[in-house]
Image (cartoon, rainbow, N blue to C red; front, side, top):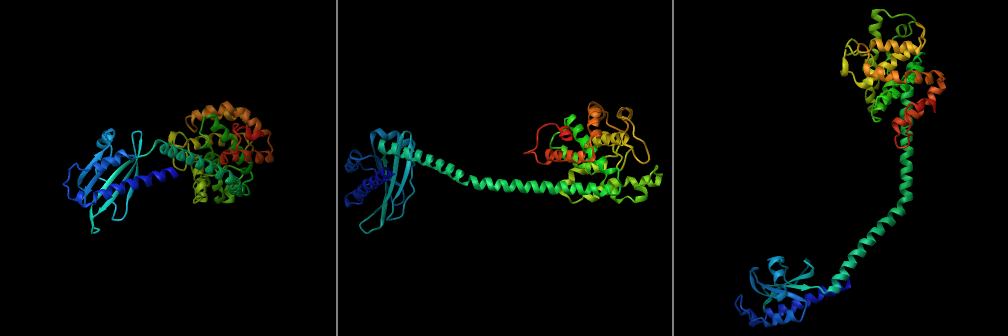
Length: 400
Protein backbone atom coordinates (compact mmCIF):
# COMPACT_ATOMS: atom_id res chain seq x y z
CA UNK A 1 0.00 0.00 0.00
CA UNK A 2 2.93 2.30 0.68
CA UNK A 3 4.25 1.74 -2.87
CA UNK A 4 0.82 2.55 -4.33
CA UNK A 5 0.64 5.84 -2.42
CA UNK A 6 4.17 6.67 -3.51
CA UNK A 7 3.22 6.05 -7.15
CA UNK A 8 0.19 8.33 -6.79
CA UNK A 9 2.37 11.07 -5.30
CA UNK A 10 4.93 10.75 -8.10
CA UNK A 11 2.20 10.97 -10.73
CA UNK A 12 0.73 14.05 -9.05
CA UNK A 13 4.10 15.81 -8.82
CA UNK A 14 4.86 15.12 -12.49
CA UNK A 15 1.42 16.37 -13.52
CA UNK A 16 1.92 19.53 -11.44
CA UNK A 17 5.21 20.12 -13.24
CA UNK A 18 3.40 19.83 -16.57
CA UNK A 19 0.71 22.18 -15.30
CA UNK A 20 3.34 24.79 -14.39
CA UNK A 21 4.61 24.57 -17.95
CA UNK A 22 1.15 25.23 -19.36
CA UNK A 23 0.31 28.23 -17.23
CA UNK A 24 3.46 30.05 -18.30
CA UNK A 25 2.71 33.15 -20.43
CA UNK A 26 4.45 31.70 -23.46
CA UNK A 27 2.36 28.54 -23.50
CA UNK A 28 -0.90 30.39 -22.95
CA UNK A 29 -0.17 32.50 -26.00
CA UNK A 30 0.03 29.44 -28.27
CA UNK A 31 -2.96 28.35 -30.31
CA UNK A 32 -4.62 24.96 -29.75
CA UNK A 33 -2.93 22.17 -31.60
CA UNK A 34 0.49 23.83 -31.83
CA UNK A 35 3.32 21.43 -31.14
CA UNK A 36 5.79 23.60 -29.25
CA UNK A 37 5.68 21.42 -26.15
CA UNK A 38 9.05 19.75 -26.19
CA UNK A 39 9.00 20.10 -22.41
CA UNK A 40 6.00 17.76 -22.26
CA UNK A 41 7.84 15.15 -24.29
CA UNK A 42 10.75 15.49 -21.95
CA UNK A 43 8.32 14.74 -19.11
CA UNK A 44 7.18 11.57 -20.88
CA UNK A 45 10.73 10.44 -21.49
CA UNK A 46 11.85 11.14 -17.95
CA UNK A 47 8.87 9.66 -16.06
CA UNK A 48 6.31 6.88 -16.06
CA UNK A 49 3.75 9.05 -17.85
CA UNK A 50 2.53 7.58 -21.14
CA UNK A 51 0.39 10.55 -22.16
CA UNK A 52 -0.62 14.12 -21.30
CA UNK A 53 -3.70 15.96 -22.51
CA UNK A 54 -4.62 19.63 -22.09
CA UNK A 55 -8.15 21.10 -22.24
CA UNK A 56 -9.38 24.70 -22.21
CA UNK A 57 -11.59 26.10 -19.47
CA UNK A 58 -14.69 24.78 -21.28
CA UNK A 59 -13.29 21.27 -21.35
CA UNK A 60 -12.43 21.31 -25.06
CA UNK A 61 -9.27 19.52 -26.19
CA UNK A 62 -6.28 21.80 -26.82
CA UNK A 63 -3.05 19.77 -26.79
CA UNK A 64 -1.89 16.24 -26.22
CA UNK A 65 1.31 14.25 -26.35
CA UNK A 66 1.71 10.46 -26.04
CA UNK A 67 4.43 7.94 -25.63
CA UNK A 68 4.69 6.28 -29.04
CA UNK A 69 4.26 2.82 -27.56
CA UNK A 70 0.97 3.88 -25.99
CA UNK A 71 -0.93 5.25 -28.99
CA UNK A 72 -3.21 2.17 -29.10
CA UNK A 73 -4.16 2.68 -25.47
CA UNK A 74 -4.82 6.37 -26.01
CA UNK A 75 -7.12 5.86 -28.99
CA UNK A 76 -9.10 2.81 -27.92
CA UNK A 77 -9.56 2.48 -24.19
CA UNK A 78 -9.13 5.76 -22.30
CA UNK A 79 -12.06 8.09 -21.55
CA UNK A 80 -12.37 10.97 -24.02
CA UNK A 81 -13.27 13.52 -21.33
CA UNK A 82 -12.33 13.25 -17.66
CA UNK A 83 -14.32 14.47 -14.67
CA UNK A 84 -13.12 17.99 -13.91
CA UNK A 85 -11.99 18.78 -10.34
CA UNK A 86 -12.67 22.20 -8.76
CA UNK A 87 -9.90 24.77 -8.44
CA UNK A 88 -7.27 23.89 -5.89
CA UNK A 89 -8.02 20.16 -6.00
CA UNK A 90 -6.90 17.17 -8.04
CA UNK A 91 -8.60 13.99 -9.13
CA UNK A 92 -6.74 10.66 -9.17
CA UNK A 93 -8.24 7.45 -10.55
CA UNK A 94 -6.77 3.98 -10.89
CA UNK A 95 -7.38 2.48 -14.35
CA UNK A 96 -6.65 -1.04 -15.58
CA UNK A 97 -5.91 -1.20 -19.32
CA UNK A 98 -4.92 -4.57 -20.82
CA UNK A 99 -1.89 -5.62 -18.76
CA UNK A 100 -1.12 -2.07 -17.62
CA UNK A 101 -2.08 -0.37 -14.40
CA UNK A 102 -2.47 3.40 -14.80
CA UNK A 103 -3.13 6.35 -12.53
CA UNK A 104 -5.18 9.10 -14.18
CA UNK A 105 -4.36 12.53 -12.71
CA UNK A 106 -6.46 15.61 -13.56
CA UNK A 107 -5.52 19.13 -12.39
CA UNK A 108 -7.12 22.53 -13.02
CA UNK A 109 -4.87 25.20 -14.62
CA UNK A 110 -4.93 28.67 -13.03
CA UNK A 111 -3.73 31.86 -14.76
CA UNK A 112 -1.67 34.59 -13.20
CA UNK A 113 -4.81 36.12 -11.76
CA UNK A 114 -5.83 32.84 -10.18
CA UNK A 115 -8.74 32.24 -12.52
CA UNK A 116 -9.36 28.92 -14.27
CA UNK A 117 -7.81 28.76 -17.74
CA UNK A 118 -8.03 25.01 -18.43
CA UNK A 119 -7.19 21.50 -17.27
CA UNK A 120 -4.31 19.08 -17.65
CA UNK A 121 -4.67 15.31 -17.57
CA UNK A 122 -1.88 12.78 -17.31
CA UNK A 123 -1.75 8.96 -17.44
CA UNK A 124 0.94 7.49 -15.22
CA UNK A 125 1.98 3.87 -15.77
CA UNK A 126 2.63 1.97 -12.58
CA UNK A 127 5.91 0.15 -12.23
CA UNK A 128 5.62 -3.67 -12.42
CA UNK A 129 6.75 -4.07 -8.82
CA UNK A 130 3.99 -1.69 -7.67
CA UNK A 131 1.37 -3.69 -9.59
CA UNK A 132 2.69 -6.94 -8.13
CA UNK A 133 2.61 -5.48 -4.63
CA UNK A 134 -0.92 -4.19 -5.18
CA UNK A 135 -2.15 -7.64 -6.29
CA UNK A 136 -0.49 -9.21 -3.26
CA UNK A 137 -2.18 -6.63 -1.04
CA UNK A 138 -5.57 -7.52 -2.55
CA UNK A 139 -4.92 -11.24 -2.24
CA UNK A 140 -3.74 -10.86 1.35
CA UNK A 141 -6.73 -8.65 2.12
CA UNK A 142 -9.16 -11.26 0.79
CA UNK A 143 -7.33 -13.98 2.73
CA UNK A 144 -7.45 -11.94 5.93
CA UNK A 145 -11.15 -11.27 5.40
CA UNK A 146 -11.79 -14.99 4.98
CA UNK A 147 -9.74 -15.83 8.06
CA UNK A 148 -11.55 -13.12 10.04
CA UNK A 149 -14.95 -14.44 8.94
CA UNK A 150 -13.95 -17.97 9.92
CA UNK A 151 -12.57 -16.79 13.26
CA UNK A 152 -15.77 -14.84 13.91
CA UNK A 153 -17.82 -17.95 13.11
CA UNK A 154 -15.72 -20.03 15.51
CA UNK A 155 -16.04 -17.36 18.21
CA UNK A 156 -19.81 -17.21 17.74
CA UNK A 157 -20.25 -20.98 17.59
CA UNK A 158 -21.05 -21.40 21.32
CA UNK A 159 -23.62 -18.59 21.07
CA UNK A 160 -25.16 -20.07 17.91
CA UNK A 161 -25.20 -23.50 19.53
CA UNK A 162 -26.96 -22.06 22.56
CA UNK A 163 -29.49 -20.25 20.36
CA UNK A 164 -30.11 -23.44 18.40
CA UNK A 165 -30.63 -25.31 21.66
CA UNK A 166 -33.17 -22.74 22.82
CA UNK A 167 -34.96 -22.89 19.45
CA UNK A 168 -35.06 -26.69 19.62
CA UNK A 169 -36.40 -26.61 23.16
CA UNK A 170 -39.06 -24.10 22.12
CA UNK A 171 -39.99 -26.31 19.17
CA UNK A 172 -40.29 -29.30 21.53
CA UNK A 173 -42.53 -27.35 23.89
CA UNK A 174 -44.69 -26.18 20.99
CA UNK A 175 -45.01 -29.73 19.65
CA UNK A 176 -45.92 -30.99 23.12
CA UNK A 177 -48.53 -28.25 23.46
CA UNK A 178 -50.02 -29.14 20.08
CA UNK A 179 -50.06 -32.83 20.97
CA UNK A 180 -51.70 -32.03 24.31
CA UNK A 181 -54.37 -29.98 22.56
CA UNK A 182 -55.21 -32.77 20.12
CA UNK A 183 -55.13 -35.32 22.94
CA UNK A 184 -57.44 -33.18 25.06
CA UNK A 185 -59.92 -32.81 22.21
CA UNK A 186 -59.87 -36.58 21.68
CA UNK A 187 -60.34 -37.21 25.39
CA UNK A 188 -63.25 -34.80 25.61
CA UNK A 189 -65.41 -36.94 23.30
CA UNK A 190 -64.14 -40.14 24.93
CA UNK A 191 -65.63 -38.94 28.22
CA UNK A 192 -69.04 -39.00 26.56
CA UNK A 193 -68.57 -42.03 24.28
CA UNK A 194 -66.43 -44.68 25.99
CA UNK A 195 -65.85 -46.58 22.74
CA UNK A 196 -64.34 -43.56 20.99
CA UNK A 197 -61.03 -43.26 22.84
CA UNK A 198 -59.31 -46.50 21.82
CA UNK A 199 -61.01 -46.29 18.41
CA UNK A 200 -59.33 -42.90 17.79
CA UNK A 201 -55.89 -44.36 18.45
CA UNK A 202 -56.46 -47.46 16.33
CA UNK A 203 -57.83 -45.70 13.26
CA UNK A 204 -55.02 -43.13 13.43
CA UNK A 205 -52.41 -45.89 13.32
CA UNK A 206 -54.31 -47.70 10.56
CA UNK A 207 -54.67 -44.53 8.48
CA UNK A 208 -50.98 -43.59 8.69
CA UNK A 209 -49.86 -47.09 7.67
CA UNK A 210 -52.35 -47.24 4.78
CA UNK A 211 -51.33 -43.79 3.52
CA UNK A 212 -47.70 -44.90 3.49
CA UNK A 213 -48.64 -48.12 1.68
CA UNK A 214 -50.33 -45.99 -1.00
CA UNK A 215 -47.32 -43.70 -1.41
CA UNK A 216 -48.87 -40.58 0.09
CA UNK A 217 -46.25 -37.85 0.57
CA UNK A 218 -44.82 -37.77 4.13
CA UNK A 219 -45.61 -34.05 4.11
CA UNK A 220 -49.32 -34.84 3.70
CA UNK A 221 -49.64 -37.65 6.25
CA UNK A 222 -49.67 -35.29 9.29
CA UNK A 223 -52.96 -33.78 8.08
CA UNK A 224 -54.44 -37.27 7.78
CA UNK A 225 -53.14 -38.24 11.23
CA UNK A 226 -54.75 -35.25 12.96
CA UNK A 227 -57.96 -35.68 10.99
CA UNK A 228 -58.11 -39.36 11.93
CA UNK A 229 -57.56 -38.67 15.61
CA UNK A 230 -60.19 -35.91 15.69
CA UNK A 231 -62.64 -37.29 13.13
CA UNK A 232 -65.49 -37.64 15.66
CA UNK A 233 -64.75 -34.56 17.77
CA UNK A 234 -68.07 -33.07 16.65
CA UNK A 235 -69.92 -35.75 18.65
CA UNK A 236 -69.36 -33.50 21.66
CA UNK A 237 -72.41 -31.63 20.40
CA UNK A 238 -74.67 -34.69 20.01
CA UNK A 239 -77.23 -35.21 22.81
CA UNK A 240 -76.51 -38.10 25.18
CA UNK A 241 -79.75 -39.96 24.46
CA UNK A 242 -78.63 -40.28 20.82
CA UNK A 243 -74.88 -40.65 21.31
CA UNK A 244 -75.18 -43.34 23.98
CA UNK A 245 -78.23 -45.16 22.68
CA UNK A 246 -77.50 -48.93 22.83
CA UNK A 247 -79.66 -49.86 19.84
CA UNK A 248 -80.14 -48.62 16.29
CA UNK A 249 -80.97 -44.95 15.79
CA UNK A 250 -84.28 -43.87 14.34
CA UNK A 251 -84.31 -41.88 11.08
CA UNK A 252 -84.74 -38.63 13.02
CA UNK A 253 -81.97 -39.51 15.46
CA UNK A 254 -79.66 -40.45 12.61
CA UNK A 255 -80.19 -37.01 11.02
CA UNK A 256 -79.05 -35.45 14.28
CA UNK A 257 -76.05 -37.79 14.47
CA UNK A 258 -75.00 -36.78 10.95
CA UNK A 259 -74.48 -33.21 12.11
CA UNK A 260 -71.34 -34.23 14.04
CA UNK A 261 -69.22 -33.74 10.91
CA UNK A 262 -70.06 -30.05 10.62
CA UNK A 263 -69.91 -29.57 14.39
CA UNK A 264 -66.36 -30.93 14.26
CA UNK A 265 -65.41 -28.21 11.77
CA UNK A 266 -66.82 -25.57 14.09
CA UNK A 267 -64.73 -26.89 16.98
CA UNK A 268 -61.40 -26.67 15.10
CA UNK A 269 -62.27 -23.40 13.34
CA UNK A 270 -59.66 -20.70 13.92
CA UNK A 271 -56.87 -23.14 14.89
CA UNK A 272 -54.55 -22.65 11.92
CA UNK A 273 -52.43 -25.79 12.24
CA UNK A 274 -55.56 -27.98 12.44
CA UNK A 275 -56.93 -26.74 9.10
CA UNK A 276 -55.40 -29.72 7.27
CA UNK A 277 -57.61 -32.06 9.34
CA UNK A 278 -60.84 -30.48 8.04
CA UNK A 279 -61.18 -32.78 5.00
CA UNK A 280 -61.25 -35.93 7.11
CA UNK A 281 -63.47 -34.44 9.82
CA UNK A 282 -66.05 -33.21 7.29
CA UNK A 283 -65.97 -35.93 4.64
CA UNK A 284 -65.21 -39.25 6.36
CA UNK A 285 -68.85 -40.31 5.87
CA UNK A 286 -68.98 -39.47 2.16
CA UNK A 287 -69.41 -42.40 -0.28
CA UNK A 288 -67.86 -43.06 -3.68
CA UNK A 289 -71.34 -43.36 -5.21
CA UNK A 290 -72.35 -39.91 -3.92
CA UNK A 291 -74.85 -41.15 -1.33
CA UNK A 292 -72.89 -40.12 1.77
CA UNK A 293 -73.05 -36.99 3.92
CA UNK A 294 -72.84 -34.07 4.53
CA UNK A 295 -72.07 -32.88 0.96
CA UNK A 296 -72.98 -35.94 -1.13
CA UNK A 297 -69.60 -35.90 -2.88
CA UNK A 298 -68.71 -38.69 -5.30
CA UNK A 299 -65.53 -40.34 -6.61
CA UNK A 300 -62.45 -38.15 -6.55
CA UNK A 301 -64.48 -35.18 -5.37
CA UNK A 302 -63.75 -36.77 -2.01
CA UNK A 303 -60.18 -36.08 -0.90
CA UNK A 304 -57.77 -39.04 -0.78
CA UNK A 305 -57.34 -38.46 2.97
CA UNK A 306 -61.09 -38.89 3.52
CA UNK A 307 -61.25 -41.93 1.21
CA UNK A 308 -58.40 -43.59 3.12
CA UNK A 309 -59.95 -42.84 6.47
CA UNK A 310 -63.42 -44.09 5.45
CA UNK A 311 -61.97 -47.56 4.84
CA UNK A 312 -60.04 -47.87 8.13
CA UNK A 313 -62.88 -46.30 10.13
CA UNK A 314 -65.42 -48.88 8.95
CA UNK A 315 -62.91 -51.72 9.27
CA UNK A 316 -62.20 -50.91 12.92
CA UNK A 317 -65.91 -50.51 13.65
CA UNK A 318 -66.61 -53.96 12.15
CA UNK A 319 -63.86 -55.79 14.07
CA UNK A 320 -64.68 -54.05 17.39
CA UNK A 321 -67.45 -55.01 19.78
CA UNK A 322 -70.00 -52.30 20.57
CA UNK A 323 -72.97 -52.30 23.00
CA UNK A 324 -75.34 -52.77 20.08
CA UNK A 325 -73.30 -55.35 18.06
CA UNK A 326 -70.69 -58.10 18.26
CA UNK A 327 -67.27 -57.95 16.60
CA UNK A 328 -66.58 -59.85 13.38
CA UNK A 329 -63.26 -61.30 12.19
CA UNK A 330 -60.80 -59.22 10.16
CA UNK A 331 -61.30 -61.52 7.14
CA UNK A 332 -65.06 -61.00 7.28
CA UNK A 333 -64.57 -57.25 7.59
CA UNK A 334 -62.29 -57.20 4.54
CA UNK A 335 -64.86 -59.18 2.57
CA UNK A 336 -67.46 -56.52 3.37
CA UNK A 337 -65.09 -53.75 2.29
CA UNK A 338 -64.46 -55.54 -1.02
CA UNK A 339 -68.21 -55.93 -1.67
CA UNK A 340 -68.72 -52.24 -0.97
CA UNK A 341 -65.82 -51.12 -3.20
CA UNK A 342 -66.95 -48.70 -5.94
CA UNK A 343 -70.16 -48.03 -4.00
CA UNK A 344 -69.17 -47.01 -0.50
CA UNK A 345 -65.36 -47.14 -0.79
CA UNK A 346 -62.58 -46.35 -3.25
CA UNK A 347 -61.52 -49.71 -4.78
CA UNK A 348 -57.83 -48.69 -4.95
CA UNK A 349 -57.83 -47.84 -1.26
CA UNK A 350 -59.53 -51.14 -0.38
CA UNK A 351 -57.00 -53.10 -2.43
CA UNK A 352 -54.08 -51.33 -0.72
CA UNK A 353 -55.60 -51.97 2.71
CA UNK A 354 -56.04 -55.66 1.87
CA UNK A 355 -52.25 -55.94 1.50
CA UNK A 356 -51.54 -54.82 5.08
CA UNK A 357 -54.79 -55.22 7.03
CA UNK A 358 -54.35 -58.68 8.57
CA UNK A 359 -50.80 -58.17 9.84
CA UNK A 360 -51.57 -54.62 10.94
CA UNK A 361 -54.70 -55.69 12.82
CA UNK A 362 -52.70 -58.45 14.50
CA UNK A 363 -50.32 -55.84 15.92
CA UNK A 364 -53.09 -53.48 17.00
CA UNK A 365 -55.29 -56.21 18.48
CA UNK A 366 -52.44 -57.33 20.78
CA UNK A 367 -51.86 -53.76 22.00
CA UNK A 368 -53.33 -52.63 25.28
CA UNK A 369 -54.80 -49.15 25.61
CA UNK A 370 -51.54 -48.04 27.23
CA UNK A 371 -49.63 -49.53 24.28
CA UNK A 372 -51.79 -47.55 21.86
CA UNK A 373 -51.11 -44.34 23.76
CA UNK A 374 -47.36 -45.01 23.63
CA UNK A 375 -47.54 -45.91 19.93
CA UNK A 376 -49.07 -42.57 19.00
CA UNK A 377 -46.13 -40.61 20.47
CA UNK A 378 -43.43 -41.68 17.95
CA UNK A 379 -46.00 -41.31 15.17
CA UNK A 380 -46.47 -37.72 16.31
CA UNK A 381 -42.70 -37.21 16.16
CA UNK A 382 -42.61 -38.61 12.63
CA UNK A 383 -45.31 -36.15 11.60
CA UNK A 384 -44.33 -32.93 13.34
CA UNK A 385 -40.66 -33.11 14.17
CA UNK A 386 -39.09 -34.28 10.92
CA UNK A 387 -35.55 -33.19 11.73
CA UNK A 388 -35.21 -35.70 14.58
CA UNK A 389 -37.85 -38.24 13.66
CA UNK A 390 -36.83 -41.83 12.93
CA UNK A 391 -36.98 -42.75 9.27
CA UNK A 392 -38.50 -46.24 9.51
CA UNK A 393 -42.05 -46.82 8.17
CA UNK A 394 -45.05 -45.47 10.12
CA UNK A 395 -46.10 -49.02 11.00
CA UNK A 396 -43.01 -49.33 13.18
CA UNK A 397 -44.59 -46.75 15.48
CA UNK A 398 -47.08 -49.38 16.63
CA UNK A 399 -44.58 -51.93 17.91
CA UNK A 400 -41.64 -49.74 19.01
